[in-house]
View 1 (cartoon, rainbow, N blue to C red):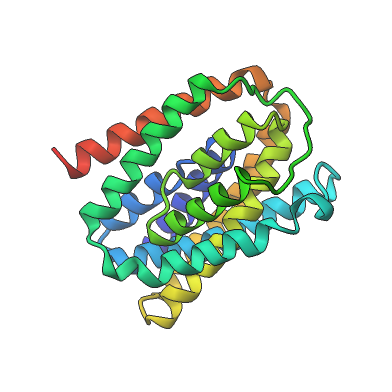
View 2: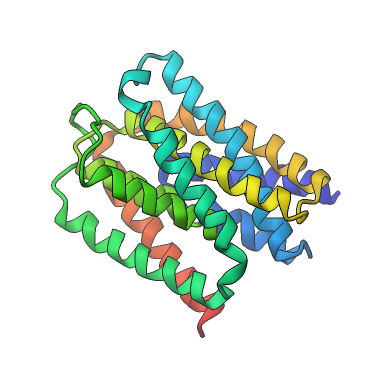
Length: 244
């Protein structure tokens, strides 16, 4: 029964995570609630995110919404960030990681009101002095802990005036890269419980397909309000569960 529950946790978390990010703050607390050790839970999340993100990315790529010419540089930047975060994760306390998460989400929430992007444009994605450091830093955060990572990335791509379905594709390739780097760190540390990781991964694969299907039908005008709501809920959940 535990493994069936993990399948549905992965399904729900990745469906929501594909649309607006924040899936990690569904799956991680749920796994901790059923008694999975924290490092095993985070490691399982990284493995499932690697596979489900690749699935979503390939779906968007095959629909010809994005191209390798635009995104080739994302992989090394996010991968190096995820590797860095994964290998230093054990050197930071839980409270420090949670504080970092809270600060980043508050910045993303404020940023969403200052940004003029609304996902209705179709600007190309280019490596520059803003996007490369942003993706590397978020990759480090994803390797360290992760919840809210996709939400913050979506806020950034919205600011760059990239259309919603294309932004999802770029977020997923960045998430795949950083999660893969982080997963290597957790696997080499020996903290993975493979039946847990595989059950979560199968649910995540199903959630990835559902999420893309819904995203294609979602009006871009509603994306920013959804992102703001999810970001605010993430901030409240972290503060309530860990600081109060």
